[in-house]
Length: 434
Image 1 (cartoon, rainbow, N blue to C red):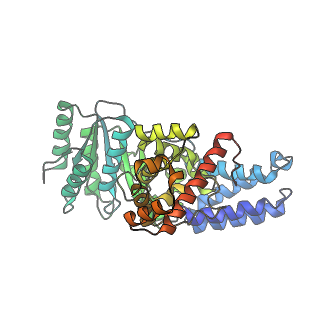
Image 2: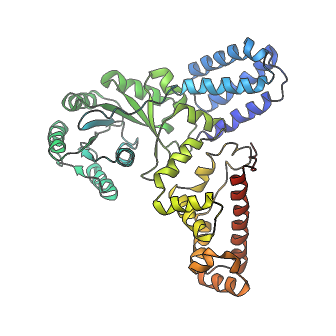
Image 3: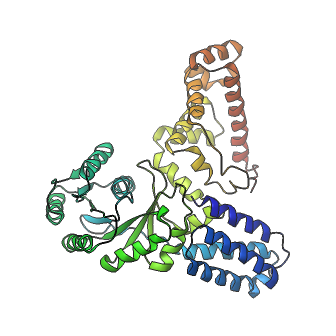
């Protein structure tokens, strides 16, 4: 996500740190590099022009000139301007109403049907409420079957009437949802290869019938600058309340995210960050700006952890806080980490990940499976008392896990290093390298 842009901006930030003061001459060099970085990331030209003008004006202001560390003030200016471009404040979802009705629209191939499943899962997790998915894409082959499969996978009910008029399906679905005490109705509408009058007329009919709390446009972030035209086209006809950017985890430059709010005034409400069903995140402009500038996103990481923590993991964490940390706790926490998704994505949320060379770390899932196999090959006593693991026990564990004794030794060494880190955290003596 924003890998190339983040690398370029980090390079600019490092360069500014070498200047004792900000001058008209050196700020021109820096803003030139900023401009190129943003244009290469496919940010709209007009947006780039205004961004650079704002940064330059503020960087040459009195606050920076009189600062003892002008580079730090400059970095804050860049971050603040990025936050502004991304929308300033987060735009929360409107979930008023009983039930709340969310209507998802978009072009064919934008990932709309998958996204509606992801959104229903996120809503159920966040609010512990009951969502209903409504299949109104009656034109695309297998669209209804796809939604039913997603509903089955997530254990979320899907309302479908097959190839009926979408307007009639919506009327009946709302009545069904009210009678069966659903909290959310998520309407999966039909997409087209391009915006056309028939599509818009049908969507307007559904809008009039459903009176939705939210009309969310699902847009493929890999579409590039044409995404702005798509958003404007839908917004003119439907008055969108928000956008969901999909495939931000793919090989995308990310420029559309930096252009959408400024050019269309449509807030980004969610972003798709992985293909998994839990790969949809609420969009926070400040957190995203921090990620782009390699300042990390610890809040999102903590929220992810809180979502998956069970009672066993909480008890294990409490033991760790008290300085008690054995391989049983290690295994419990290891299982929780696996639930967070690919470990390299979590590492990227750490402040200074790029500076420490961790932004391109690739972790083979097999390595994690091997670690788990080694620990599971130990007896409960051995996990609670790892100091008892001498040569004969290590040989038995290696055979039981189909790994080598060297791998067992390596794991035990890593465990001991982690124990030292836990003690340093507990004593407050750990100094982070950023």
